[in-house]
Image (cartoon, rainbow, N blue to C red; front, side, top):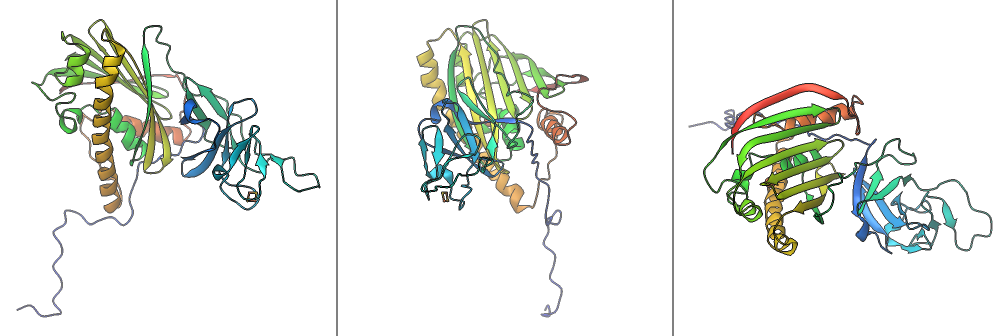
Length: 366
Ligand code: FES
Ligand SMILES: [Fe+2]
């Protein structure tokens, strides 16, 4: 019989739970992020979050997007609860109005002149291709421009969608560019419905990006592949990550089908990421039919990803940090992590087009 004093047997853990651990979070503030679509920014203030910082977006006198810290200079009420008035934002508490530079445009009942310097931090903005971009450092004019969407020429349909995931930017972008999980987590929807094929993948890098090209993949047997190219064909497939947070997936199937998904990831908080995806495609099928079938499928695929990212984030949290191991199949995740770390250390930056000799080639089954 064991006495009450006998030492308790250790739980059969593989390793002790760390008290505090690592989370792949990079804070790149010399960078542009998409905070809204142009359509979302109408006559009302729009509350958004970037790196945990509450922002309010509105349109100025020239109808250009404006972004301020979402905190009134007077008594710190959230400006996003106020209203837009003549190109300014009006605080809901005492009615102070601020312009796009954060200067007081009006202080009700005050007879004395009010300060002319900015009272609320403001962020540079750009509007292009139906997206509203914010530069992540306040009160400065950036020296580079947001990522330009490639001009694909005529004949393309375009759809923009916003989705949110409870994952770090790194985990969310890796998920968007990760091939091996598609046959498993999305079994039958994309890949994994038929027999597997051995193909080659070539990874290349430049100053601000990493790209994987998949060579020799027959058209996937899943629903999406069959819809796009009923007669089969060979797939040309690229996955790209471009600093600070652009994930691009490009497919050509047969001669007529081309789809380019440009997803702009926005770090809302450390473990919450928004994706603004611009999906452009050209196919011989009518656009309405592709949208009708493809959209619910894409949303189903993303719902599976979002569920997994949330559970992954929760598991990492419970275990106190990330304990990842990779194989050579993890082509993009470690490369994305490397770019984010290097950018955080100032060793590279968005727009850096320096060539890089580094190259890796592997064989894999899809
Ligand atoms: S708190 Fe905004 S006007 Fe007073
Ligand atoms: Fe996925």
